[in-house]
Length: 248
Image (tube, rainbow, N blue to C red; front, side, top):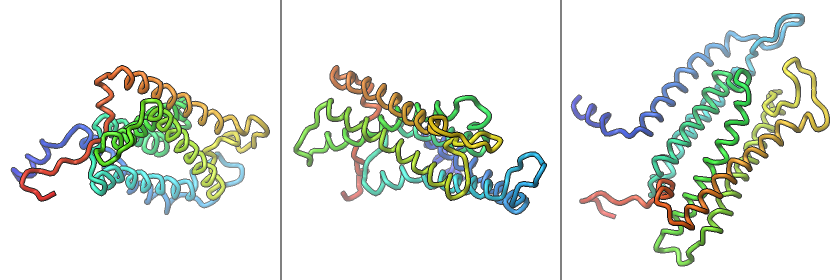
């Protein structure tokens, strides 16, 4: 018991946030699984729009995906023996919670104005930070001969963030087609399909704010690296240092 309490006290803020998200996802998955068996398969003609079984199946898939993504940073950092900066990890956890749990499970995407655009802007900046961190890890590695300048670091971080933003749009497009969803907002809430530029507005808006979010962070990061600002060290990935008495 004392060992367990000691272990709990040693947990960082990021680890407590991760535990909170994991528990939230787990509880949601239980209730969603129950709703899958209770929800109707098709909409009833002449009745208000209902949440269908396919909607709950997608919610369950998102929660499972969220748990997998939640575990990925720990698995990758242990596999490749590097430490994830606490600030970067907290930003990642906040985005995961806001996008999957609040956005999808609690339906913030449909109830909170511009929630989708806020998250895309935030994700652009967060992915830019991760891009900086990964390249900086190589830059500080004694086995890598070539040292990359702040300009290259910035370009890579920007391209990294925008590319992952594009992959997210592919994900939305794919599941809209497979499960008849409306993540890309190609139709109104009453089912009326949009045409022309109106049908592209949500997707292009997401890409634009992805670019803006990543560009703002990359420009700040470039300026900080050029000036040698110490706060950029909060975004540096570091090699794991073996504990004393443990063979390398």
